[in-house]
Length: 266
Length: 323
Image 1 (cartoon, rainbow over the protein chains, first blue to last red):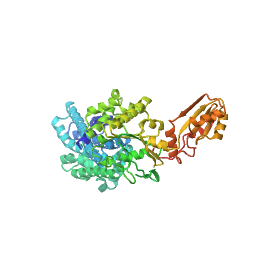
Image 2 (image 1 turned 120 degrees about the vertical axis):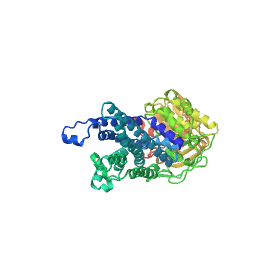
Image 3 (image 1 turned 90 degrees about the vertical axis):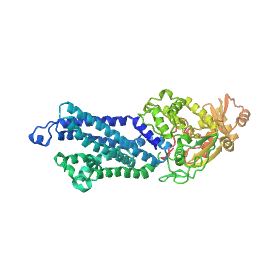
Image 4 (image 1 turned 90 degrees about the horizontal axis):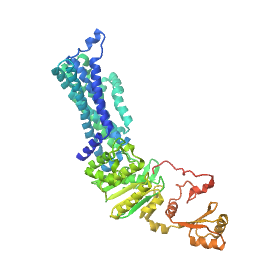
């Protein structure tokens, strides 16, 4: 297993897609943070909803952009296994490790590791953004770090579990484009619809589960929710979210191992 | 082993064994089931029934597959953005092979200078060399090669021929598939011949050639070609056919110069040149054995010549399948 993992990390390291994902994560976190933090608001009504710059709520809002890392962790997880089929590297991979269950198990672990890296990349960018804002005269370091500590752990955990979920999707669907479209499409399109129609079901879907996980500290800091995060009240608890996401990833990967991945490699 | 793809029977109750110390050729027309058989041997394709054993176990149960079997496969993959060296390192890492060995095999196949280049920029021949390097990485006891000459330049083909002979001579196993018969005839000791997924011949090449009715092809250049054709058709030396190949060339199959010579002397025909070819004998043997189905109704032998001077016959069409 150690050898297999070593090979997997070598694979990650030696393709540009991995680096592209990390760079995109950082650019998005930084870029969106600035946009969210300095979006112009013209009316007094907006100003009421929108926290004043430098306040705790403002830092919370700006640092929440770290959550985009989660979607990129999903992409990484999907690529981790579908890339093997896309470029047919699955043939040499299976020649040196012919047991397909081992291949998937290794990738479950390595994609989780990849999720950590994406989460840390997003987290570092978030920290740099926060420090930059403080240096720019908005708020103070203590206030910023308090909010950072609330947001980052949930984001990191969600990144790990989303990468595993992405791997599971990839293992089951095998086709890279289909897996990416399904993975991101479910979060962006399908979930909001189901969530709107049957919230009791919707909150158990991956996107809402991740939100539950990410909002752990946020809602705790709100002491009962409210404010701009009032929509979080119907979410499942953070640990339910974590377990649900992990279950999605593992169940899909196991299903993939016994269906598509068992198929002939020609 | 037997393998069905839906209703198509790709490999039909195939049984054979491969011995160490010699090069075994795995021959058959495109679509005969060679690749499917090799992929079943390597655990990539599951047989519908039967199994293939390496050292007494199926590939999936080999304790150290990379050091046991080296496989050169068609359509094996490379990530285009990964360098040749990193590609091999990912495999070396799994097998616990020292990275120094990666550079060693790259040198061996003549890719030493290209080790740091990305595989996406490689030519077909270079990819084939890299595939060979990957197969040799674990210094295996068994080499399985699927059409290794594909994409290689003549120099590369000659090198691989010599390499396979050297590899086998150290008591190791070599199984090499090919549809290029002239190439195979120069390399292999034993042959396994496959047609339509079925075994049609297995044994030492020389023994199979002697047992076959096929003998030489005699080619005669004469200013009196048309008369030679008619006298040969009347005299019937040997068992084969007589054809006019050009305005001054006559081809006689399944015969020997000893049989043709007297006929020409008797009829006082001037001869400018007479040659006989032995190289085509494997081809003839092969066509005889794989007769039916594959050649799309063309006469066995040299199907394209039946078209005559009007043009070049297309490749006989065949049903979709794996080669």
